[in-house]
Image (cartoon, rainbow, N blue to C red; front, side, top):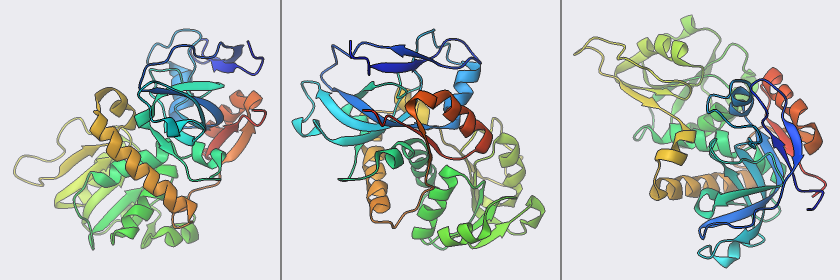
Length: 317
């Protein structure tokens, strides 16, 4: 066994991950690839699930939903040009993840990267970028419509740029957003508190949670759209035959279990298109804070405490 073949493994809820030696994957399915991870993105879902273990991970499970690296092995039905290519990906929470030397993935669910694209940057993208795409796609054409975005994090910063590029007029509700940054991304007006919302919007995109989304629904037009990027609305918020708003929920992780191959093909294609925009600097994302692989537990803590985009790098590989 190569001494570099390692994985950070779950032990029990609320405990730090343990670094263990692992064997390289031996048998993969015909539609799978093996990625040699060079960088791993850390998202809130990672440290939340490590703390609470809602999916009942067994001891020895490897977490991590986002990663980037080099394809080193392909199954029989995978196009041979995948070998040696750089990719980034979003892995299912139910499958061994990115916090390891290797990750096995379906080849249709990875995004191929432009030549010389930063793998640390790539590892920071899949979860927030694909979530932003899903949120944007919930609505029909919004050109010249007014929308409200609540929250100013990794997902909504990308979403704001997508909306702006498509001619949408955006108000941002955030008590702490950097106004200069928000305006540069395409925001029309920054509102510091809910009481400043004084108009009816075609759509509200909420990234705060059910309580926030519920409060903001009153600012929707009669046939408006409420898009929940966190949580969901369990029951209709208005009596029948009054405000007939449409309810939308975004859940990237569920696509692994409930999405079909067409869903993934379309999402991956759109993800690769946004990566091209990042490559030519017509889309902007935050530069992640990078930790070495051996400090992954510290990186998880930093992500939780700072809310900053965080990446772990396998610089030794």
